Amino acid sequence: MKQFSLLSLLFTFSICHSQTYVSLAPSLTNDVGKFSDKLNLAVEAGRQWDVFSIGLALGKSNLSPSHGKDTTVYLELRPNLNIFQQGKFTNTFTPGIGYAFNAKQTLILEFTSGIEYSFTEKIHFNMFFGQYFYSGLQSNSSVNFVGLSAVMFFAPVQSGSIIKKK
Image (cartoon, rainbow, N blue to C red; front, side, top):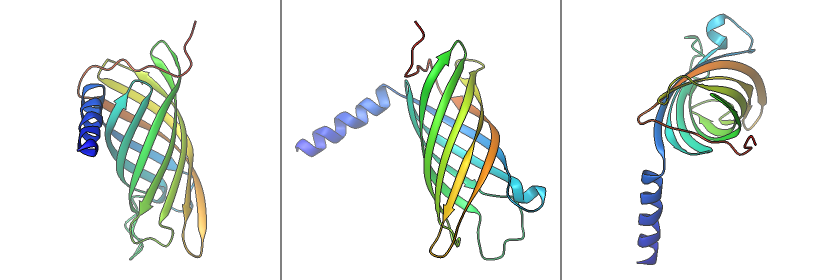
């Protein structure tokens, strides 16, 4: 009974004190190959609590059709922290972890920093950059990337930051 009460309390807290968002995030990597090999696309849905958010992203590590059986589809958990806020601009940090389906390098680690702009209370834009680390049983690799995401909140949001301006 205690476990059920605790889970109910956590669920209620997560619903009452957070905002739901969806994001479309195209990015460009420094991977080898054609332009389609360098283009990454992800759709993310998640919840935000003041300075912290967590989302689940489904994406493709490149949009090239010529990868045979080695797929480029991945699923990634992306926690995000708002570090510093100045007016409508917020500095963000995201350490993500994911899984690439049917790939030789299945583990994905992401370290991203970005500048988010609050266009309205419901629409934000984020210019981000970082690095993906891919790891498998016999090989690993990494790529740098830069991108621009559009984030839509389902209710007005006023996000905060860890470092407050005095």
